[in-house]
Each structure stands twice: as C-alpha cells, then as structure tokens.
Image 1 (cartoon, rainbow, N blue to C red):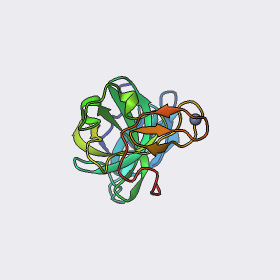
Image 2: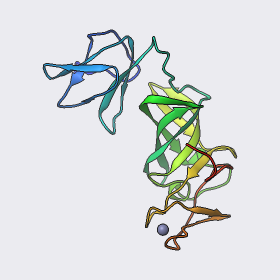
Image 3: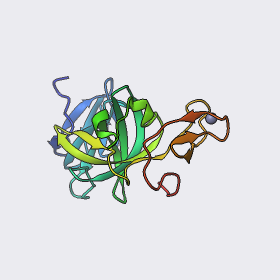
Image 4: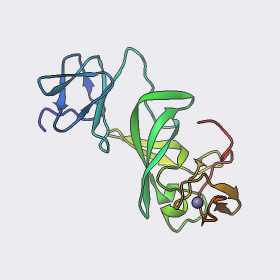
Length: 190
Ligand SMILES: [Zn+2]
C-alpha cells in the first residue's frame, strides 16, 4: 500500500500509482510488470468502490468537481442517513472518470425526511450540488427545487417511476415509493 497514490495527488508520467492486485487501470494510466503508472501529468482519482485508478490530465483541463458545482450521477448506495452518488457530469460536461460524493440526510431536503430511502434509491439518477470538499471527499446537497432525483426506478421491478405528488408510482407493478425529486423530474436527457 505504500506505493499507492491517493485521490487528488499530483503525479507525473511514469509515476507508480499502485499494483494490479489492488486496483484497476483506467484512463490516463498504463500497466507494466504488474504495476499501474501514470501516463500524463494530472490528478489521481481512486474510486474506492470499483478500485478504478485514473489520472485526469491537467493539460486537457478535465473538469473536476469543486464547491458549488452542479453534478449529475447515479445513486451508488443508500443507508438510513447517508447516500452516495457516482458523479458522471459536471454542469454540461461529462467526466472521463467517476467521482463519488456523499449526501447526508440533513442535506437531502428543506423538509424533514425520516430516512434516506424516502429520498433516493440505488440506481436512481440525481442532480446535486457540491457543498464541501475535503481530501477529495465530496459532500453534496439535494436541497433546492432544481436538485434531487431526475429518474427514479421502482425498487421491486426496475421500471421508471411516475411522479404523482406526493408519491411516486410504478405504472408497471403498482408499487408506491417516495423520492426527493428535482422540478424537472423525468423530463430531461441525462
Ligand atoms: Zn414496479
């Protein structure tokens, strides 16, 4: 683990990032003799969920989320008081790698919510805003009418949910669920 670079670190071409037993080589990297190296000058990104290691070239000016960024992604996990979002888009620009951000239940809505499962579910597509970044851990908020779930999927059959305020209805199986939706839920392209 000593050789392993952390997310956010600046690296040079040829710098060792990790070994293939632990990580998956992704954009901006190459493998030699079982180790993963950077191909470019840039910032390391380690996705702790997929173990993908990539380097975002500074030369290309790849977008990186920062405080205030509006990001779009898919919900990767949900717990009672926390959810994670795999961001794939900042503003209108698609990312070449993935960043993961966390939403705490206190940032889920201006109105009281009992559980994060009433806000979003795994696999939903959602829009969020970055409120803080510390050591490349992004904290996100869903507060605001433009933020929240854009497409929610039925927990039991996977069909896209229809918004029938205040509930979300699956027109395929009749399941009724809850979400914190964005104003343009179900309308836009992703
Ligand atoms: Zn259903």
